[in-house]
Amino acid sequence: MIALIYEDFLRAALREDLGRAGDITTDAIVPASAIGTAEAVGRATGVVSGLEAFGRTFTLVDERVEVTLHAADGDRVAAGTPIARVHGPARAILAAERTALNLLGHLSGVATATDRLVTAIAGTHAAIIDTRKTTPGMRALEKAAVRHGGGSNHRFGLDDAILIKDNHVAIAGGIRQSIEAARAYAGHLVKIEVEVDSLAQLDEALAARADIILLDNFSIDQTRAAVQRTAGRALLESSGGIDETTVRAVAETGVDLISSGALTHSVRVLDIGLDIEVPVLEKIR
Image 1 (cartoon, rainbow, N blue to C red):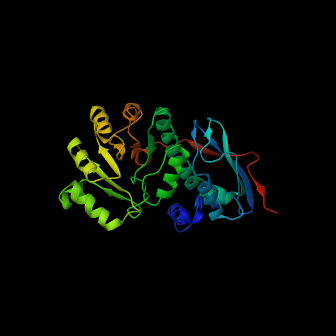
Image 2: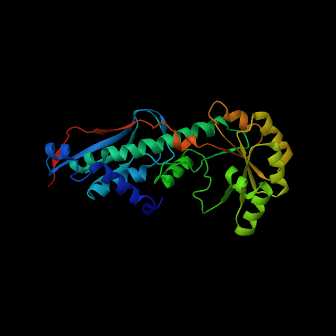
Image 3: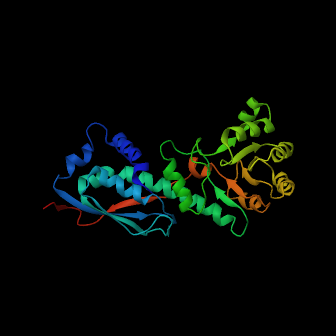
């Protein structure tokens, strides 16, 4: 990933933590001339994501910090496995530690949660995708984490794909009117997806030649019926409260895509710690 995509976010996160005076605890205790080495170690098994951002967080505080990666984004690491080594000015390592670990733990949590859903539907036709329910400022990083976990991305923003939702339909006056207006506006290169909440609306969307149809909170029986009615005329996406306990049944109906906002908005972090090596400190020469 190009650092320019997320570097402003990293700077803002560091400013939030360092405030006006920096890390006054570390500055009071650790000599400015001291250097140290630390290892990022997983406390639980999971899929790693966010290593580039993790390393850049340290070098933004001090360019002399050296980061060596022991794993790559998308790798599954066991508890106790070293993930990265950080070496350089000790004050910088300690000042950046929490921001860097927050990022790495959260993004690895997204990748790990995605991996669980992908594993749960193995052997089916369906793919796991994300949504726009992302943490403000972290969308590119979180969507990369979904890919590292074996999933795929839905649209990145409002400007790169058309998704007609229930409020659009209500204002436009119907499914057909919404799709016709979108097609006239977007031209032939842009895919049109529409959200439906009933089989009757599905039929309207098919008649209006929607490219993708989102089945919002359909039951398993409704989803199976939707697959049969569609018969390949459009891609079908299932969405709404789908988790590890239900995703396999949804996938086995024959839908093409299964989206989950929980992958990014409700994920549990992967526990990762930063362990200072002994001897703790050396002096900068």
